[in-house]
Amino acid sequence: MTHRPIILGIVGDSAAGKTTLTKGIAQILGPENVTVICTDDYHRYDRKQRAEIGITALHPDCNHLDIMQQHLALLRTGQPILKPIYSHTSGTFEAPEYIKPNKFVIVEGLLGYSTRGATDCYDVKVYLAPPEALRAKWKIKRDTQKRGYTEAQVVAELEKREPDSEQFIRPQRQWADIVVSFYPPTEETPNPAINGQLLNVRLVLRPNIPHPNLTQVVTCDTNSYSKAAIRLGLDRDMGKPVDVLEVDGHATEDQVLELERFICSNLPPHMVAMCDREMNPELGRVTGTTGETLQSYPLAITQLLVAYHMLKATQAHQL
Picture 1 (cartoon, helix red, strand yellow):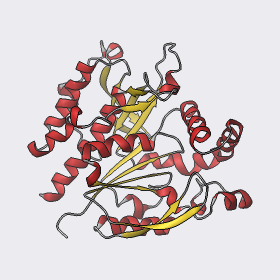
Picture 2 (picture 1 turned 135 degrees about the vertical axis):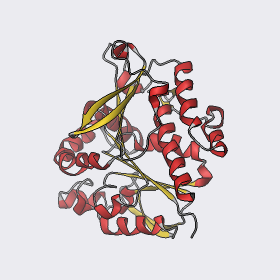
Picture 3 (picture 1 turned 45 degrees about the vertical axis):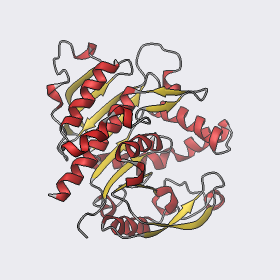
Picture 4 (picture 1 turned 120 degrees about the horizontal axis):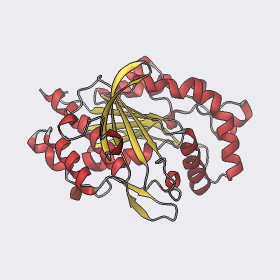
């Protein structure tokens, strides 16, 4: 086939924000152009069986990683798969689903980079690494509101899963092209880590893929660095040199639009329209504690930058 799908991996621990990030990226690329796969569907055991065996969903032995890898390889060549379905609501498996890949495939889950064969299938790889205290709050909120758990059950599950998180989930960070860390500002604000409205983001940009030259629009001046709402610097991540882009939750719309327009200007003309915020109402949208919709500029920039790399990968593949 002439045009194979472009595949994005979004890996992170439970409740790290994978689905929220995916939603905005799919909006930019066009929902009709995107197939979303959740690797939780490749669990080997249902919720009851996991409890009986004493194994967590984070352990490789609890997942059909060989089938996941095989399906990713098929999707990469544009072939359909018969994907299993795991229901988080009931904790049981449902009838498998016939999936035919669209132009873009987003694969989100816990163990997407756990095998070399799977890792090689992605064009762009993202890892979500929020502070553990923030992730715990997100998980408690989600699992009590949407999955029928009590807060005590979620806290107990977090403690039970911690050894597997440390051994199997966090090491996957090393394979990512972009590491995304949302974090609360240091100053005291009302529930910043819960409602997401004022969260900052730290984006580790590894040189594995060609990032846009942000020095043209983002300050690198060390004298004003700490005061700038959007800033670019150098650091080391897992021992290797990286660029780091930070966007504060209090960044103004004008500052963010300048950065968005610059990122979009690096795309081919026929793709630039995809970056228009008016065409992407879900960009940077998060749900607050009382169900209200909030606008997060750090989230919007993150979604746009990842989508940019997906579109650039499309361009490179067509050359």
